[in-house]
Figure 1 (cartoon, rainbow, N blue to C red):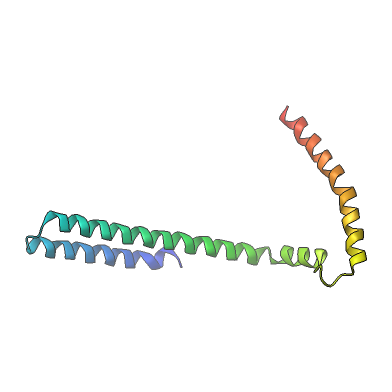
Figure 2 (tube, rainbow, N blue to C red):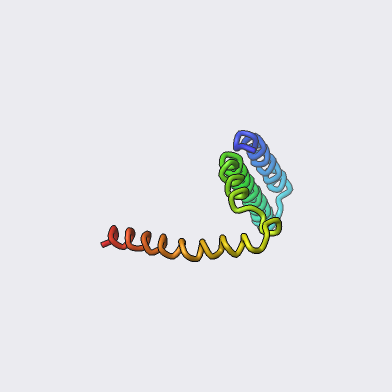
Length: 117
């Protein structure tokens, strides 16, 4: 959904609200009704904009997932499903990770601490 789809809808909604307000003025109504109408109208427009922002965020997320699908698939197959692997292999990989990750973090920590200073 793009903004090009919603622009004619919002213009029509704005025109409809102006025509309803002119009807209220013709009936010589209470100003409180006009304020209530304006409150309801702006609340609905706010809800439409929130819906629009959420749809854009979902579109962005889906395009990000689609463009990085290879990376997600590679990580999934590289790490594998834990239920299919034997326990001994999982323990070996955990032992390897516990030995290799802390030195890597230490190297990164020193690299970034030297850059900050």
